Image 1 (cartoon, rainbow, N blue to C red):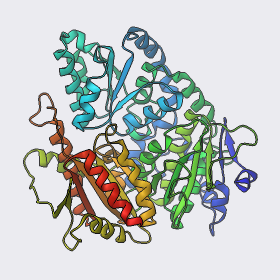
Image 2 (image 1 turned 180 degrees about the vertical axis):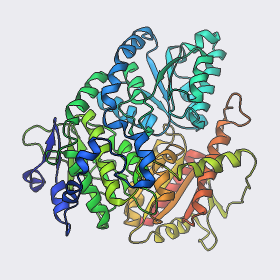
Image 3 (image 1 turned 135 degrees about the horizontal axis):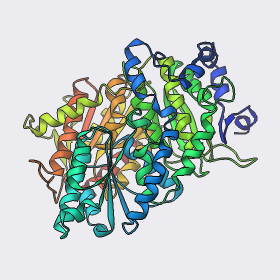
Length: 550
């Protein structure tokens, strides 16, 4: 770590990137210099849509507003102040959103220590528990750029019905909603019908780049976050975007691209304990969904801490992140030294990582503003809900776990797991995806480090359907290197989606099945484990994974 600190850092407006020049310097030719020679800093700051090639120009022209959205967002501040005052009695803020509409607000709230309930699930148990929590004091921020996200619409319907069932009139229920969506989206008309307050999203910014738009700011302002500080931090940092020196975003982007093109395309991310919490989940979506296409991409692996497995390894670039460092502080903590450390205020982090992702995509030759494979799982889900589904029998059952494995897989649970892990090749990764209750079944996430030890390869963990709007694009459009462990669970008490012919449990099951169908169509190795009783099944699963390490 001392060597990392001793090397020159690239810094601007309180945000510093350590170690990036060393990564770039290890390459036969400097990626950073190539970007400078092509005038990428100036062209990107000027919103040149041709940087990613002619096929991406239209998407880029429509989506480069993130470079200065922090300035346009200042126009929202008076409305946010009025909104916060008007709804001051509603002190339980629930954000119903998916992907970029929920990940950035969650990071902001965690980092600033403000209470915000993020509801980005279709698990009926988790939805029921949230509906039962302080309903009369709840304001629901319904966030969807397109206005057509099925999860968000389902949650809106559930809350609307819950308010009416609690005895509220429609006018009273409407006061408990704030809608954030693009002008002209279907959700704008729904907001008017509900009598809900509508705040326009920035139409020049895509969802995963929307941290400093209304999608990120509205729920956080209602939760008591001083959002002006975030805009100030981004505004101060923005002066660096066109520079060829003292440009941390350029340094970070060059390091990401250099590593990826040299075979280090797995990015291990961990917080260094200096005050920025949960940023890895947001970076995961930004990098994976922006670069994971055309058989290419960068896979973020979000770690619980620097002490957990997966910090280093073949093909891995390790990056720590945190707040501003005091003199003498060391980037990162624990036994593993990161290759790169990014430290600074959160508003600057957002802009720096967005810039770095866009710059890395230039080198990789991919369009960072589309998500061509995200719709596949959605289409499969819709077809399954419409009745296009078969119900296969489990290949075996052990206790509270049904095993659904492809032909040729050992029949026992431990054998099926070992077969999946043995199939992860030297450049591959294992993705664990759990369609469970993020609160009641939170312990399942601890499978990630255990499986990382068992397989010796990068292992990611994602909650379904949340990951479908994040790493789901990389799983299908990125390198064909993934193996997949999907975990589902029996629903004991289901919950209807008001106005729809399906329940939350049926929607959740269809989403899991839709993703399996999309992955199997690409012949990705897949093992599904269904917990017929969740607590007992999880305990049994941990025992089975433990036996793999013996």
